[in-house]
Image (tube, rainbow, N blue to C red):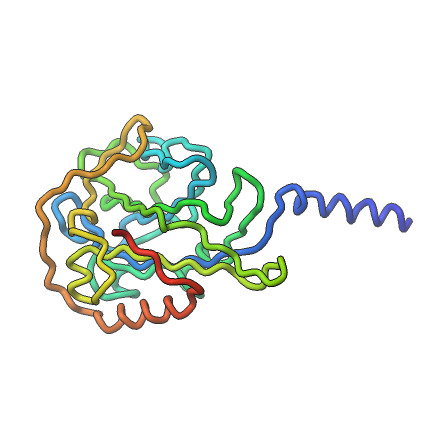
Length: 247
């Protein structure tokens, strides 16, 4: 009987050993201004996604049938609605992450196995102004129907260890502030407003390419500035390392 119980215990442990999970990560994204192709901030309810690349070095562009371009090495960590009203009060700007608002970005399993989510895997932000969280696929989109942002410093965080043992969750804090948002809330400044334009269209699966540089736009809305500043400060206090920023 004891040997049977031992055998069952060993079988139950096999998936953990095979996948070699080593801990968890919590992610927080602070971003804006996300806009459509003309520079108008995307409305609340628009689709926003955070994607990780578990193998390779290049994200694939969305196709008409797949948000990840059919790339099996991409993992969608978050796919949900833009919500500026409840997080910043600034159209097109959002704080995404933290407990308990966005559980998808909390306690993300991290592995030591290639092909699964690991420390150092790249991250990407993409948005679709005309889609919602209920959209099953991008569909056929015309020019200006989605945008993206990425940076080499946007990676799954390193897990804190002591004597070789993971002691707590890895904490990642990522910023994408266009000039207009930085003018309202302060640094960091990721670059011109055009970086936040949705100036892409679905393709046949080609890698992401740099977006054209439309004329920048201005935004005068400062509603919720204090709330956004407070949210940024709170999320930064949870990070164990300096917040990465584009540019």
